[in-house]
Every structure is written in C-alpha cells, then in structure tokens.
Length: 179
Image: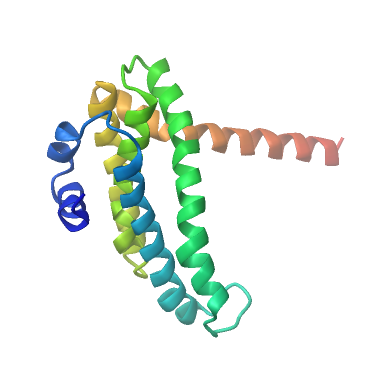
C-alpha cells in the first residue's frame, strides 16, 4: 500500500477511487491506512489544538501521556469505532436494498478517514468533516450498489435516529419532572 498515493486518490477523486477499490481482500490495508490517519490526527490535535484552546483541564502543557493517548490509543479506539460504524451502516444499507458486504463497508469507512489529516486544523476542520460525509456517501454507493439518494439516507439516518432518541428521552424526563 502506498499511503500517499492512496490518500491523494481518496481526497481528489473519491468516485474513481471507490469504483476501483476492491470490495474484498482483507482488512489489513484499509485499517493500516486508517490507523495512520488516526495517529496523525491525534498527534496534530494534541500538539496544536490543545495549546490553542487550553485543553480540557485548562492547562497548556504537553506530556508523554498526551502523545501516548493521541498516537497509540487514538488509532486503537478509531479502529474499534470503524467496526462499530460498519455494523450500523451495513444493516442500514441492506435494509435500503444495498447488496454490499460488511467487509466492503469497513473498507470504505477506513478509507474515508483520509479527511483526518486535515480535520485537526482549526476553523477549517468542520468543512473537511463535511467532505468526510461525502466520502461516506460515495463509498456506500459503490460498495452497496445503491443510488445517491439511498446512500445519503443511509449515512444520515443514524444521526436522525439519535436526534429523535434524544428528543424522546428529553420529553420523557421533562414529563417526569413536571407531572
């Protein structure tokens, strides 16, 4: 795997990348690619954003534990999150008529982490995050052989469901407090 060429392909021409991406072939290459992205994201966030914003506890110091968390634990938890996201999206795509596999879903999510190399940058990170959503939509279209509309629905449906769940829980708590 040539990391830099893969990153450029995902970011510059995602449709072509996902169309040519093998839907099978194991998890190693995509997960190594994602782990590198998570590690760089964590390190850059720890180095730059913590100092700019003061960190969670108000301190501006940089420590070994920050590096450990960012570079070691970040990729571990990131890879775990890819597998969890893949289960959710795989089920949704299948319910929407998709024909892809769980492995293909893991692969397109792992390659969509390419946006992490830029998303740590203050003030533009959220724009890159929106591009990440686009990468999910395009990857899902090719892996699951669905149209753009179904892929958009599959990608945003988990967010809508969580939002509705929060509203329902809030309504329940509110009703318990004032009844």
